[in-house]
Image (cartoon, rainbow, N blue to C red; front, side, top):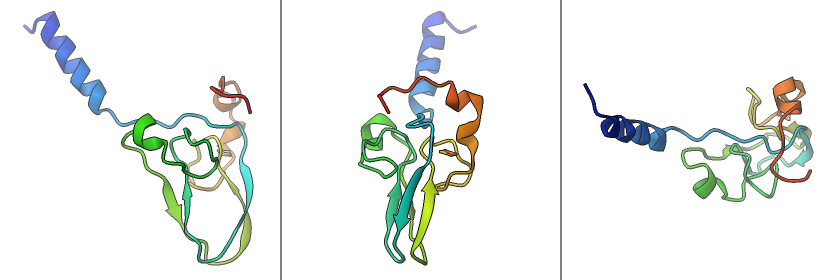
Length: 110
Ligand code: FES
């Protein structure tokens, strides 16, 4: 049987290697004008202060997460996800309308 101290070490190691999860940055998508051929880094962690794009905050706030880089093939208007819960990153898929997003208490004023 393992000692309590042994279990604490095992749990601590498991938690320290657990992947980061995104935080809800906003409860709405961002309307953006995208340019063909330009590389965009969409923030997937939710910590960036330059939403919906990456500012490098994931390196300290969410190790293990990285931005979704994408390059549009045509100039277009798009809705990029701000809640970071979409299944079609970087684009909004409507997940932000769900109650767990709308009832979430944001860390900053929006
Ligand atoms: S803003 Fe995230 S799914 Fe719409």
